[in-house]
Image (cartoon, rainbow, N blue to C red):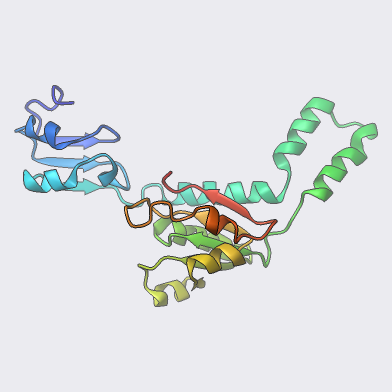
Length: 206
């Protein structure tokens, strides 16, 4: 990276680590443009401030993608689409296995309508996911100590404590960015509060 930054004023960066050591050896650098939503994960922002190098990022670029993937995973848990697809490819669609395939569907199919969607982390991704949950007639509850309750009410999201979200939800989505304050936010104690049939989807930062 240092070699590539020789004589360079503006650095478009994705996942390359930009440490203070790199900045110290890139004296021509005047601006960093991160294509990530969270530039702090690979860029030493304190060092950038020290060296007077502004950092801009493309916040929200994956909002729809993350929310759509999350809701897709939830929907795949309500219908055995993958299981049925694999069974039909293997066994083919025949009169003899019709009831067997039907039994798979009937034993593993659920409706999202009126189920409770719990969202941990009500940032851009969480808010977009809430839109999808509302569109499917779900009750949406959320946990995020940093958001404005009035803004959540406008999105038809009821704010709850973390333990309430874990215990009341049928589907739980973790979309909170990992920070020193919320590291290990969801652990064995919280998972033990979940309903026996509830599902957990983690599409936030690992």
